[in-house]
Image 1 (spheres, helix red, strand yellow):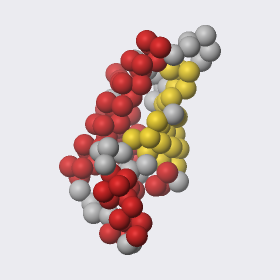
Image 2 (cartoon, one colour; image 1 turned 90 degrees about the vertical axis):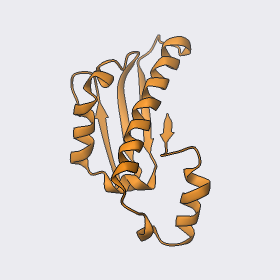
Image 3 (cartoon, one colour; image 1 turned 120 degrees about the vertical axis):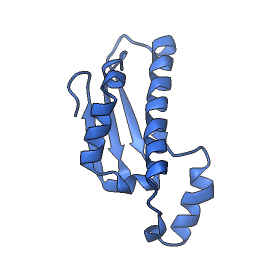
Image 4 (cartoon, one colour; image 1 turned 120 degrees about the horizontal axis):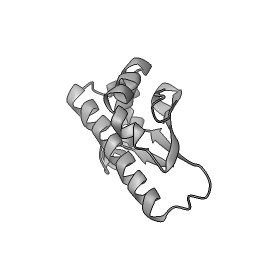
Length: 119
């Protein structure tokens, strides 16, 4: 299981302040959203590398990714589906994971990705 934020400092520098104010103040910024989606892919690559090197692979492995970044409220199901399609090669290379389960907490959504069976 892993949580992915836009940066390592999103929680202390932004999320806590936002909670103390109003969630309506989250700014829409397409560049930040795209940077966040790239960070998700980089995190998945890192988890795959770690799993190949040091995880017990006698049993099926599932990677659970929490989409916790507040900016993800601007990413709807259609955009997540496009994200998977655009990164199909990354998801097809998810072994030793058999599936990646995304929890989009900000949108109360979840979806499963398996190799060559996107969403």
